[in-house]
Length: 391
Image 1 (cartoon, rainbow, N blue to C red):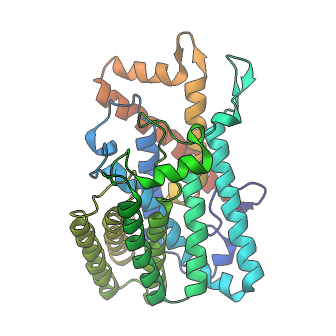
Image 2 (cartoon, rainbow, N blue to C red):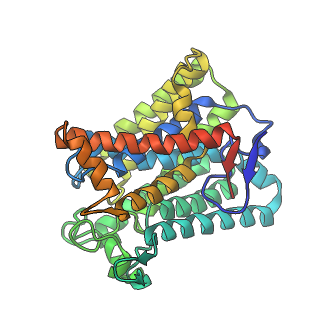
């Protein structure tokens, strides 16, 4: 018997495979698998045994450039757009009040949960005091998802057609490029010259932004959220196309062509506006969205048309409670790092045990893999019990 929990938001209500409001819609296993693979990779790259002791593909590019890890977050946003293709029509049919109530509620809850995750575990047991709010990071992954969901929902709701969405997306990417170039310093695409950082520091102050780049700078800041909205919009267009046309060789071919064109567009734009995740450049949006479209096309062929579902369930588990599993992995990671056993944390003891028989890089990856599988077991338990956590 399927159960849905309404009391706390940690999942995504509007995912087609999770909501009773979508029970009369066709399921697209390829989208579930795509979303699940994204969550799987996100947990892997976020939880190494030791930062710096990682395989090259699962490290972010230092600044300009691209690795497999740099594909993960935009893929998550793209998957959010896929899911919106299944519910936006209902939002439109139920009127303005219903639309704004649903969208605003979800936006606020996702954003607040992201802030609370940044603050967790709230209390410093060593000093015997709460972590000060004055040093709390405001932005983050869930916060960007919340804002992108809000702006994409508004654009889709009031555009209600493919052409205006494409035009608005193009304008957003071009306008972002113009703002960054015109208002930045002598090196507008650099860490020190990026105008978005000035906006974030003015808006929330240096104590409330990320400090992992050697100076106050937030890779999920406000200005760079604008192009990230386009990842959601392109995900929506891809999902809407699949819903409208179904899975066929013709549909998959057209998706492959569109994906390749987006990739080529991103690589060409890279000559003028370098591919960069940390300031979420427009070329980066085209490149990552194109890769996502190609991935969806390949999965649609392999799973839906060819019927090869072996191994799909592993990723499906992640895809059925995606944000819950992501949030749970965050909490579990903090707990592992907080619990002290002797001179090392629980995280440290597990990682050191792997280092007894493996080089640090291999041990670090093994730790990330084991940690991710622990989270998969939680998702597996929820799925077998029919529990899909939603707003």
